[in-house]
Length: 315
Image (spheres, rainbow, N blue to C red):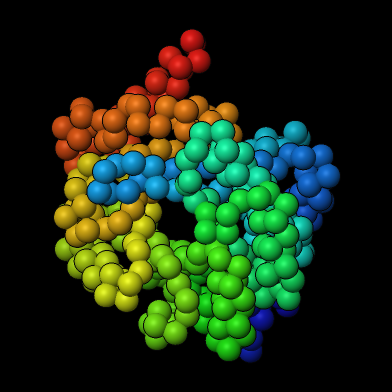
């Protein structure tokens, strides 16, 4: 019945054993996720962003990870939608906000790096009446300056009940946090929200970056997004940057920041701490990575970076 409704209604669906298996797995994952919250199996990794003017670190995105004692690594694409359905995302989301703010403030005090930390909000979080209070509490408990917290939302979330969205965004901006549209260009929405909502960043979806610099359509879309955003006073972050060719194209189009494996993969807390302690060493992008050309992927710069981490630890 649920499958028939999901397909638009007015039709039938035949029961299969695969449906039963999928339903059983969702129940098992849901129970395991409740256990994971209680037992501290969830953690955050941090993926740095780089500015394209000087290559310096410009921020970081907090990414949720789950390593189950019984199941091993469980991908976010599997457990986050389930957490949305069963309501656990509110508890998890509040924890992510607290943890990200505390960790960012710890690094700020230790290293003096005023790097903003970005946290993704789910649709259910954004619609929750307590969201502003949860964000305010996380900032107050950590001591992190509000301007160093960025909240990322998708286009579809922004376009759901525009009046309520406007009120929520205004309340969040009053706290001093920054707001970004994640995966820009993939949603079904009107561009009018760009001028009516108090946004700070657009993040170009990796689907448009992947074909750069050779795909003419991707190139045209990326150029248009950057030009439009800058005209509206918004900064632009390109996601999924993996090659020197992509980086060069984005630099010529005056993209503000990049994020992706060419610069750094997501790092565990210990690795990110080492990264911050080495900030400015080694230079980025590495000379031989830039010389490798557009056909090379992030494996070169990533392996060089990890070798630097190992040397710094005396490994």
